Amino acid sequence: MSTTLGQSSLIVPRLGVGAMTWGDPSGLARLHPAKLAYGGAHGYAEEKRAVEVSLAAGVTLFDTAAMYSNGAAERRLGELVHGQPALVATKFPGSFFFRTEDMPKELDASLKRLGRGSVDLYQHHFPNPRVDISRLMDLLADAVEAGKTKAVGVSNYSAREMRQAHAALARRGIPLASNQVEYSLLHRQPEANGVLEACRELGVTLIAYQPLASGLLTGKYPPGSRPSGLRPFLPFFRRQNLVAVVPVVNLLKEIGGRYGKSPAQVALRWLIENPLVLPIPGAKDSKQAAANAEALSFGLTPEEVEALGRATLAWRN
Image (cartoon, rainbow, N blue to C red; front, side):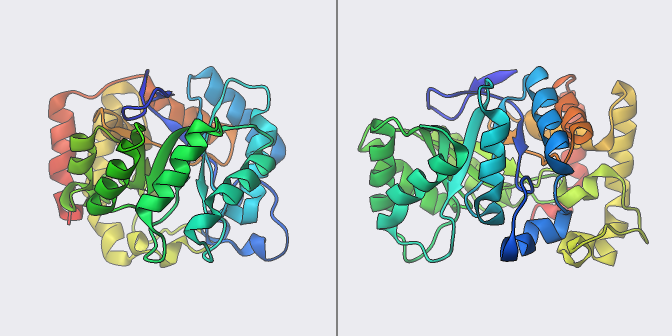
């Protein structure tokens, strides 16, 4: 299963791999919130195997960022996909002290860490009042024209910010390919805040991060059972949410039972059934990567999609 990323020329699978926790950070980078919340990936060998099983399943898009573990995630991903038919997406900046004019050197630093001459998708990680979106998009258009990135995306942009970025790129004849935001059955704000509608209107792909709601949609955490690390302190794992999600997980299990699939695979498939959406679940090892890829192997009926939507309306706002 493949599609174009937005209206760009980049052909992508309907599912990607989030490589946020990959690599071996040192010093203070070991305290990156993602590492503390989810733990690190399960070492080089398992990360390598995760790449192999993903590619074998047609999941060729791998997403990382300069900020993840202070560049360690980019370095590891670059090592693992070197010489492989993989698509690499990364995000900038690498720190909070970013100025608009820093973008070219941020891109060069990412390319050096990745060991590549170009990336497939380069994304602005988060909007900032100090950053001039129109000027930034001009610099990203320069990067496209220089062959350093094939497509331009944004992340965590509002509908208004998306339209501003889209218009600035359009003046250079370049599409805004994607907006990467949090989206899942338990985080449906993109439907309520106008982002999903703006994606539809502008022809932009919504790349969904945390598509399994930090693991809550896997069914592994019934009331009274919480994950390790920092995740118990996230809103998803408040006691009332652990109770409220039980009927949702039961419905995921019921639907999954018809196809021999897990609750997580059904939750990912719910996103994939929307042609605008491309989920990027994380994979700390090959087992998770293989399980995630199974979401491409079946489909949901319109009635099942609607039933899941109704069951999670409380999370829409």
